Image (cartoon, rainbow, N blue to C red; front, side, top):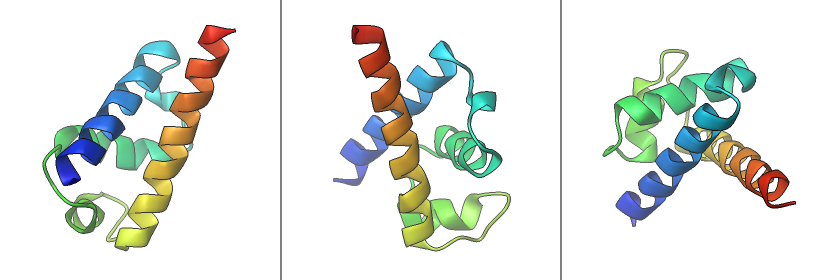
Amino acid sequence: KVANASNRQIENIRLIDQRVGLNQLPPKLQMIAKTRLAHQEVSLKELGELVPDGPISKSGVNHRLRKINQYADKLRQTAAE
């Protein structure tokens, strides 16, 4: 379960990076995106402890990653139109 979610997050982060660049994300999302890329195997709780502007709670990490996933989905829709 952790691996699947992590893979999806990484895929979405890479998509954003390729299409528009991670610097287009708000700083808090950039930070979590870069930390996720650097620590692909860790749980959300661990990710929250590793993030430079942290520590942040598991739910805080989840919230930021959901925003990244939504952003990536928007990019996919735009590309499909």
